[in-house]
Image (cartoon, rainbow, N blue to C red; front, side):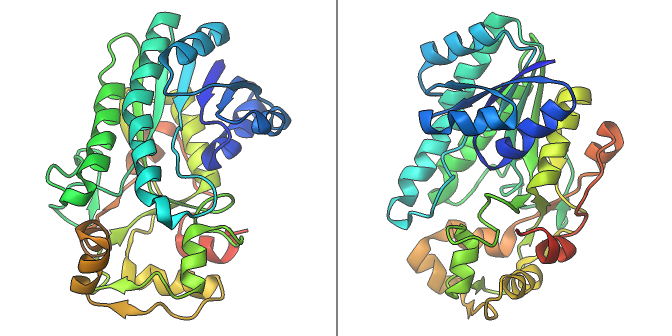
Length: 314
């Protein structure tokens, strides 16, 4: 198949492109930066520089590519941490999940695309029910006010993609990425790793929020499976070991060579950082990926973060 990967130079794109090429697919990969075109070419993709927020540019790029499948992996969260401009980075990602999604869908419909696969995440599963949610779970309808725009952007992406009537629309709710070019790796600019090494990523409150993780290589292989065999709707993609923050965070710190994380009461974090981070650390729910394994025949190279943190961070 010919596959148009929007956001091909990002963490998951850099794993996805070579996996697709190895399976005989022809890949056209987008980037915002001309400096990244040679890296994309080296991965096996035909690079194209495009601003995903420019509807005419997106329409032109998709029309010229004539793909059968569009894969939407656009975010603005890559690169070194810039904590002075966090709101700006989040706002840019929100636009890519709303306007960017709409531009890709309009271009795909005009070009006769048969399938769209898009990146969502599991961080804001509805805060009711047990500690683990399947695909019947919905995005939290009443998130803290300081996260409402970001959660609404995720909801827009999922509803827009799975609601297309002219093709198969698939949204993938990924667990937290770790591994090469993610925030959790052994590298000087890795966001979470850097914070843990400086003891600036604490266990908030009881650390009772349940998180799911997925190694970036496994995330890419699940995406390939969804492209090739996925049915319209939502798939969860994470490892088999959802766990509370107070369980996994000390293990991650140890794997990175950091001291044990501090513990900070939720009310202090709420005053400094807002309600959203406290909610994530104390109320988040993990996800089950049984549907993806059953329907897509997907298998994990790293079925648990317990081994993945020890073996897969480099």
